[in-house]
Image (cartoon, rainbow, N blue to C red; front, side):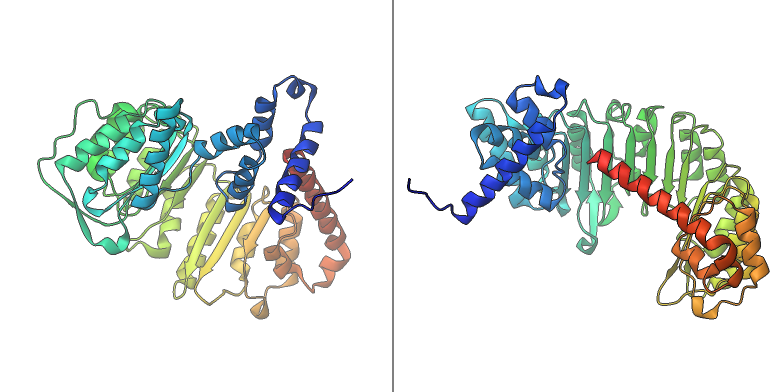
Amino acid sequence: MATTELTPRGKTQLDVFHSYKAALNDLTPAQRVLNLPDTLDVIFSHVSALSKSGRDALYVATLTSTTFYNVAQLRLWRRPRDLDTVEQQVRFAFGVAISAAYGESLGEYVKRLRIRWQKGSWNTRLIKTIVSSCPGIKELTIHWGDAEDGMDSVTQESIQALYEILGSLPNLTHLYLFKFCATEVNEDLQIPDDAYVPFSNLEELQLYDFHWYWKPINEGLSPNLNSLDIGFGTLLKGAQLSELSSKTTGLKTLRLSCSVEIQDIRSFTSALPDLECIDITQFNDLGMFFPNRFANQIFLAVEEIMIKIVKGGEDNGVKALVDFVNKKHQTLKNLYISFEGDFKVAPKEEIVTALSSCSQLEKIFIDFDETKSQISDAVVEKLLEKCPNLVLTDGLETLVKGREFYEQKYRVKLRKKETVRRKRLKMTCLVIS
């Protein structure tokens, strides 16, 4: 019997088919009662449409058969690639329109959309058309302009456009608004009275600029909000931030990169019982003293600290860090310190001594300059004795390497603990995959 040699493309398709066929054999009994499209959807749910490799895999799957094409295509449409150019936006809108003309609109399946609003807002009509054709969107990102665009005015037309865009998405839960070009706000802007409605169901909100739309944001946010990120360029007053706390009592994550006073942060956070993570980045003159002042005024059970020390601010940074650790020693579990630029700080006894008081400490991530270590054995051994939950990290290894007491008393124990941790992580990865 004559055989036909497969082309490279045919071999690729055959390999994909075999891999999916093998996946079908691994399904649970409950999944086996599903029909083929439903089963394929379960399989494709493990392929990320956000990565290039994942999207390539889904593209290849669309070439396998009609059934594979239909299922994989829906996966790609649920989380389309970023629409950064007008060309991409036109092609997307054309695809939605064609699918609607021939039957069911593929825009109905879109759950996540990231789109760029050009400087001058001249593609506003196109964006409104795209968003209105995708009413099921749950996650929306709008990038307005670029940093190199210079000044771009916020006009009554752009206010109305934003109102209409957000108002057409009843299922919106995650909203990310970024304005990268400099803002000039025209006076006497009128915002519709019901502009707050789209914000009432949000679970996550991220703002860079867009402070000129704060009134409806403040009115609409509710206890549904879990994560709030107010980024650089967002001009807010302390009173505005404090007022928001009574409406966002379910907040768990707070990130602030705008200039606000510490007392305002304290007022805001003190009314948030479920707050778990605070990330504060300051661009004003507080400098490296900010962590110290922050520790004095924010009475939270901090479990993790991440601090970046800049060149020239080593002394102030270390002092602020030590004070912070001393005030949060009862709850601190993880410490991350990075250095900005081409320099590192030598291990200092005051840092290690402060960490020794943290009985719950688990991980130390500090890229110390190990060539300049002058810490005594007694200080390091005290750290290991007082912090029994420590696991071996690069930062800890820098402190203990070459010390005789460590090799004799602690090395085997810490290595064993690290081996167990890695095995658990591997098992977790196997379960997930």
